[in-house]
Length: 403
Image (tube, rainbow, N blue to C red):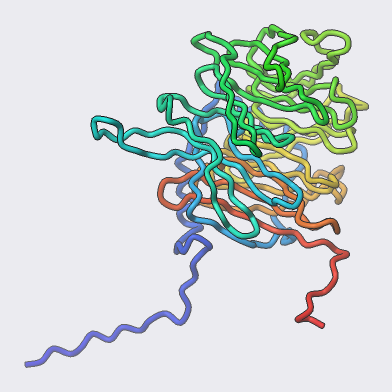
């Protein structure tokens, strides 16, 4: 006797996300309920929730998905530092990121070593810029690209300067302390001076050409991030292993703050200064982003949080300041609309969700008419890569196929 054939009807439409995954929302919800981000101050997230005065609604759709490159594999070396992805504006339209490569040593054993790669955002071409094969146990903690130079800081207190034109690489030792992680590096615009902050509470200012340190500032706590005033680089916003953020004027005293920004409940790892120099944004492990008006720093102007209530790892204003992007530790990047009035306690945002640790989120200019791209590094062994969203200019001409 023949058994009746099983009748199975295929669904008319199977919805997948940009990763090709189904059941995306349920997986993100499961991660949101199970994930616990690291904090240095107990119960800081619960206390920070009472400070939120802006309710962000996910109602924006300005940023459109443009590309997802699966071949790049951005890596996060230190779980608290997310300074390993850097976008470059201009004709190159590229992003530099940290990755890991494997090779065989003399005895046939597998050895991993860090490298810096460059992804061309137009052609998708990937090239290797810097390899640290000579010291495979070294790990990259921060990168900076400025004036044709790639500057790399490591977990062991050393740094590399790589000339992108000639390919020449110079290695120097910044500190020999056992706690001498290079947390952050920043080049002062239109100069040859680079600022390094190490985890042993020292800030170094160095000439790139001579590799000589002409100033060392000893701090009472480790500095994790430095933002320079866009109009006056001597004014510096420093966030570190302190619940407060500080503004320093190096013309007066590089070790004594002129203003203290109070409000966060835990250590801060990111900050940014708006291009007009009037607004400051800081992000903390307490899961909040706080905005300040430099004309009145006694109390934060706005306090908001993201989707997953995890640590805020990066924060950045876009090129003309109507938007602020901040990335959470995993899965979510939020773009806040600053053109609307946030004084009534309600704001608009666009939540960009992914699956993996966020290695970084940076704006990049797409054209001279105001078009911008948002590049996001996703660190995940299986489905990591580089995401790119695009916001077209309002004054852009119509495409030829639309005429």
